[in-house]
Structures are given as C-alpha cells and as structure tokens.
Image (cartoon, rainbow, N blue to C red; front, side, top):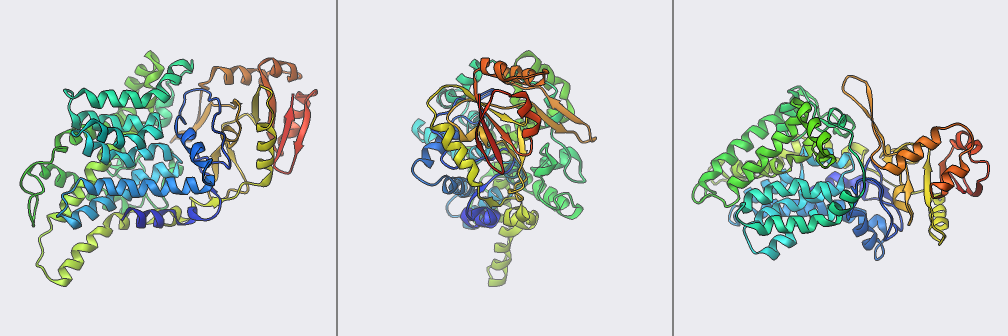
Length: 502
C-alpha cells in the first residue's frame, strides 16, 4: 500500500535528476564531512545521505528516501492493527501515507522531519517492548535529526510511561548528534518567528479546522492545488471527526468481526495524550503567540516550538488508526458488492486530497544540475587550503530557471562543498496580511559577514580576515559584487556561476 501510494505521489520525482524544493536539497557527490553553521538542522541526515551516496548515485538515494517514507510509514501504521483485520490494516496504512500533513511537509521539502513521521508507528509499537526493539524503531527519527526526534518523543514517552526510563534514555542518546552542536553553536532564535511560523487557516474552516484536518502549515506555497476548496476541506474535516471518534471508541479494543470490542490497545491512552499535546502546541503559536515568544526569549532552545504544526505527527497516527477502526466497524452483508463497497473505503484518503497525486501536479519534479555546478564543486573540494566559501547574492534561497518544478530552493552551495559555507541565514517570511517579516540570522559568523558586505568600499581584505577563501556568485549578480572584490581572482566563469578565490 505504501509503495503504491508513494509512486502515485512521487511519479514526476522518480525521473532522472534531483527534486529541489524549499528545504529539500540533495546534490551530486555530497561530501562526507562538512562544517555546519548555526543550528544543526541537517545533522545527521546530511551525513547519512553522504555516506549512502558514496555507494549509490545521490539521486537514487533521494528517491529511495522519499519512497521509503511512504513504505515505512504505511507498514508501521498497519502493523498497529491486529493481523486479522486486513481491511482495517490497509485503511490505516492508506490514511497514514496520504494526508495533508505529509503532503504539506513534503512540498516544503522537509524530508528529514518525515523520517520521524515514518518511524513513529514503529516507535509507538516498540515503546513498551524490549529496549533494542525501541532503539531500532527510533533509527529513522535519529537519522532525520532534531525535528524528527522532537515530533517522535512525546508519543514514545507517553506510550512507554514515565516509569520506564529506557525510552527517555534512548531519545537522549539518539539526540546527541544534533543536541551537542546546537548547544555549542552560539546561535540565536528570533522570537518574532512565532508570528511567521504559526499555524494558519488553509481552508474555509479556520485555523483549528485546518489543524484537525492535519493541515495548517505556515507556508501557503506548501498547500496542494485546490486544497482550500469548500468541498474537499469539508470532506477532510468530516473524515477527521469520524477518525477521532472511532479512535476514542477503540478504548474497547479492536475485537472480532463487525465492530471494535475486546481488549484496549496498549498504545491507546498514550497516543491520545501525545496527539492532544501536539495539537495544543500547534494551537499555541496561532492563539497564544505571546507565550511562545516569551519562552524563546528565555532560551533559544525553545525555538522549535515556533513551527507548532509539525507536532501534529501523533495526531496523524491517531486519525489513521481511527480511520482503520471506522472501516473495521462498517457492518455489511457478506456479498461481493458489499465487500467491494467496503474495500472502496480504502480510497477515501486519496479522494479527499486528490491533487497530491503526480507530485502535487508537477510541484515535485526531478531536474538535472547544470554541469557548471559539478565543475565548481570539483575545484573547491580538491583544494586542500583552509578557508570558508561565501555564497552570493546574500540570501538563503534561490530560484533557478532550470528548476521550474521545484521553484524556490535552499542554496545548493550549502551541501556541495567540503568546507564551511557562509550564507545569509536570515529568513524573509511573507505574513498572511502581505507584510514581509525578516527574521534575524542565527549564525554569529553570518551576521558578521553580512555587516561586512553592507559596508562601503572594497571588502576583499576584510573577507580574507574573516577566513573566507572562495566566493561563489550566481549570474547575473556578478556586477553587484565584483567591484567590491578588486583583488579576487576568477577561478571559473560560466553561464550560471562565477567562482572567485580571495
């Protein structure tokens, strides 16, 4: 089921090349080791991808990861349903692999977070089992990094129970690769980001209705086409209400044929608590932003609470199981037509979000990198001399003419080079009222370089003093910067990029 739905959702992305969209940046021949800047959001996910890309082509690694999210998540959700409830298993798997949360996060390029979503059912299943079962189940979230672990932790802790410290211990150990660099980074978090990343209404039923329907992500560009229509939004909200009610009824257990009944699932109460807590966090940024801003002002470590909609992951699993329970509870005569109608219920998740198919109608499309990027990568990575690379123009995201399907994407230079890459990590965010809010940069070094670039006169000596050896400029912006770097030497010049050495 997961593989089928994955192919349906990713079809244009499975062609030759890479899918480049917002935070999803895979590059050819990624370096195994590269210094990070600011908060380690791509640790250890980028290192794992680089290790796999040393064995397989990087574009195949990306396609395998994206398909794996659907397969692993659907299989795990179905595994939480008793074996004798075949249709319920398939329904649960279908819902978990096809919903607004997964679609929006994928369209925002947050594949590492979705590894946490894919592994969540397995972690819930193993939370009360042996420690090594839970350790294996947490591996997808551990690879995904900080956000994947944060959306997984509440469900694991709630299901395992606070009296079982192994869950907390494993979560802590698997968080070390990103937690230690984050504490040592010296990065800061702009509390105004709460307003930028708060959940929003993506349909006619308000922010709460969007969240209950598993949508409500802050970026409108992550909506699937037609998601806000009255008919589809109403259908998703009704489906969510039915799923939640059916999950509550599961306190009596799955039971035998006909309807839920019998022993209550071991995960029932814990998942309900985790889903409620996740919904509360999602609502906090939208309905009580001052409280979240105050927390971030006290400690930058509360920064991940800005994007509260991410914490709906346990609610996604709860509604998937509830949908499975609803399908299991449908009472029909055992006739071929009735069985066909019952089986057709498996299509409901797809029917209420049909435009997620075919890469959200072309928004997820594979493209090839121009050869110039590979040549620049080879030149810089072959240089043993120390020094960082500065990427210009001064901005975090790029819009390439050769990437029509993905549109805006995080600067690929951040992943290409085996040396520190200095970029502008401030973030302009368009608010719902049309205003653009620019969040302050997190990386102290990026803030210093930004001030240098803003000062008048030549900047070659100042940038060298900051430890920068290379400057990569996208064309046609070279005229804006070349006169500021009079002593720089042109190492490579192509139609797309210009590489300078200071």
